[in-house]
Length: 437
Image (cartoon, rainbow, N blue to C red; front, side, top):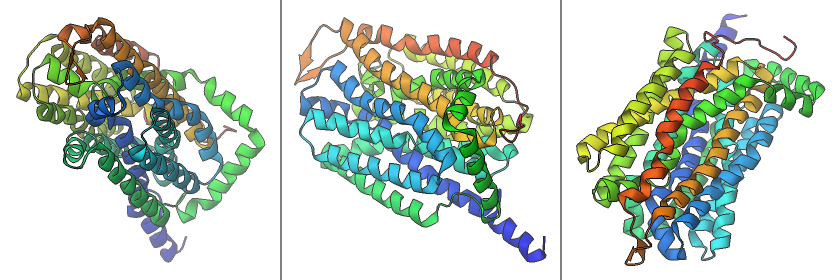
């Protein structure tokens, strides 16, 4: 290669500043969808009052996001492996943004549910798009750290969905806050259009070969390949189990739980819930770096599972903790559960490079299936013990109402440890590069 060619590769090729720019911009898609996923934690009570809903119906409305995501995640993986990641991401992001805007103005519960579903449909492509591009712009020994950074961007979206969205909704109302949310989505669509490309120019020929190989291999054959790999399912279950605090405490019930059980104010609860995402923001790149550094995928997963169990117990079983203690515990919980990010590079290394998005989609479908189940389930368990007391049109929940719903988390941390035992250790190296290997 000529000197000018090497300079061009360094500037625009693998592991380059251009690679970081592309991955950071596409991760704004993940940022935006995580904002949509978690926004109900800030506006759930407003939604409940506006539409006159029970806790169970609020859970169902929130979970419509997961139904859309669940249905699209496998098709998303197959499409992203075969066609332009940039084009697919733009289309999905635009769909989700328009659904958010319509949600902000509708007075129909049914249309709100449809919009929530469509937003989730678009979200089915977000993380897979990020990982697909990361695997093309970075080498395998950098993938865990890059994945951690991508997840950090998502957690920033979750963080924005907490205190900032709570303050915004209080200032201008939840409808205008959601409309502002939709405008933000349009700005991100423009950035993706302007900056993101499918791969470095020097890799374009390889990508075309991958697409041709997949065309010969066939859709059903490719799908069977990833479905039959037990490591894909174990990685999915580990990630799902470690992610439950985000779905339960971060996305829906955390603020209400903190107000009722620990007796703190609504504003204080929003600060505490935000620390869950701050913890993940720091923990995701930290676990990714640690995994790459020690050349192990399973050891950080074990550490995260055990330590998360230790942290969740006082949150659930020591009542009326101070705000300071709660801030620390929620930060630690977010930091430690971010060991889930290790599943993604591990699965990428245990599958052919052509099927990266399809393999990762197994993780996504397991996570989204858990959201479909867990959010309505927790709402049902809370309502099961509720005495139907109301104050100013709002249900009043007692500590005992939350007991069985919150027990889900420590049980899942125990299960996550044993799930990690079954995942094959890769030593941070790809098992094989192509379908033909």
